[in-house]
Image 1: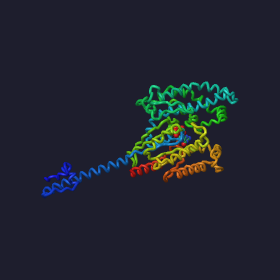
Image 2: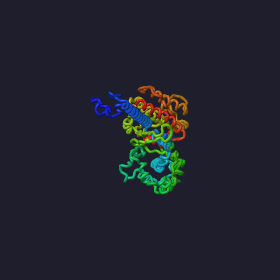
Image 3: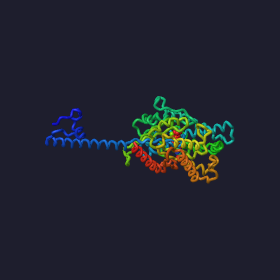
Image 4: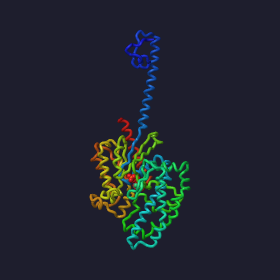
Length: 453
Ligand SMILES: Nc1nc2c(ncn2[C@@H]2O[C@H](COP(=O)(O)OP(=O)(O)OP(=O)(O)O)[C@@H](O)[C@H]2O)c(=O)[nH]1
Ligand SMILES: [Mg+2]
């Protein structure tokens, strides 16, 4: 055996270190040389194996690299609905498992719409409106038990004994919401134990019985020409409002009602706070990758929380609802909704923090936009710069797309691709095609950031 050089200390005892350092002991005999070469070969093998393992681990980390997607846009723009579409696309079973929880939200949506009709009629009654009939008075009395059903349903979404676990937020603009971090859907699952969605529905008496008992009277109220006239006089257009289920009373007020995927997409529950949703991709080349999707509250009071999620985000899906061109913000009646979307888009595009983030724009609610334009509502009345261009959906969407694209080009700190889609995210089928496209953009963004790191 050779004697290590004193300066190399204990580390030189290690054959791997010695081999790597290329040390050749003085006065080496042929047998010692053979032994050393064998040790070196062995050490090289071990070293190569370690290198290979590290390379695989690095690749795995890259492949596994968490993808962060942020959903942004004003309130009611369709962020939570887009989250549901992504869930439906990537993990349909998980959405089905939430059907019972969404059923309660849908019942509450229906009751809210009925309440808005009843409020308008009561007001007409107080003002002695000639269109208020005795039939309507009778219907209002017969529908009074609905108040109790609503209270029971609200308690179910936010049971008092689950304090701190699920927190009901008091209505803002007569809408209810649940703090997203509170896990209200999980609270439902706890209540359910191991039962299936169908079992829940069978044993769901209480509010469901009241709804079923009132079903015919609710339909009579909603289809009454006198009630319709009062709503029209007061310019109440419930058909365009969020969580509209009045045309489906027969189906939804049945005790054994089970929501379809489309019903779940149309259900409205205002987001308060930030909801994190993890999707583990099960198929395709990105198998094993985890996607974290963040759904934020869009009303003005909620927007200050957005920036803390900008860090290491890969892509942003920004929703701008085009149908709201004739509406103002619920939180500030002086601000036109499309104007607000354009200003928000400008601030996202110009953010230096987001300079390297892919922005994907959904010009949403194109279905409602088409109906509005067909009904004769003119865009130029609310957006004078549209001038006397044809008031049809093709021209209007083209006009808005160009406007958003120009803002991105002008305000982005460095050039970026423009991904603008015309969407109606409640339509799962047409949105699936867009999701496939968005998937590609996100995968590219992730690869790019992995290579940069
Ligand atoms: N008809 C139609 N309805 C839509 C569309 N997108 C969303 N909605 C409905 O609009 C309502 C509001 O959508 P949400 O997804 O809750 O809006 P949000 O952006 O999450 O709103 P906040 O949580 O308040 O920030 C829901 O009832 C949706 O079903 C669309 O493209 N067409
Ligand atoms: Mg939301």
